[in-house]
Length: 182
Image (cartoon, rainbow, N blue to C red; front, side, top):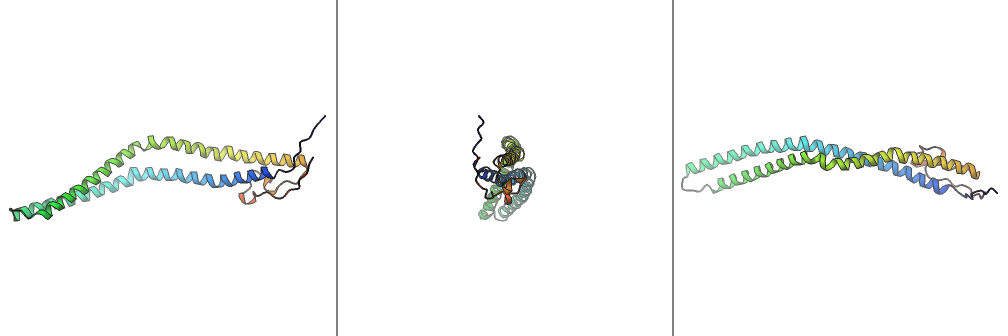
């Protein structure tokens, strides 16, 4: 004896498919933006930041040399003392240069270690992006075929959004369908 399934509505499947399409439309650009930002960070770290630190270091070396010359001049003109201001200027210039050298060393370390720290995360992002662009897209198409098959089986009208696997999110909301028990 042949029994038939009692399918009353495919709206839940269509609702899920519509949500999947909306998720794909939002998630893919977000992941692509993260990938782009990581590339920009690498470029900034390897080029822009290092060049800027080196430029600042050169400027600070000049300021330090000028402060030293001002101190030597003050000590020469007044051998008994009174060059406290010039000594403080030398200390400040030396401290600023040391800070910049430390930033430059850190930038070199970050640049050297960037790939080993970021590549595992990049691979995970690539895997997720691949999942979004292939598997979930195929899943949405499969759901559309399933909805079409079930609608044909029940004899109910096909929901609007299930007409094609590439339907937009705007058309993804399920249309009212008549419930029929077969």
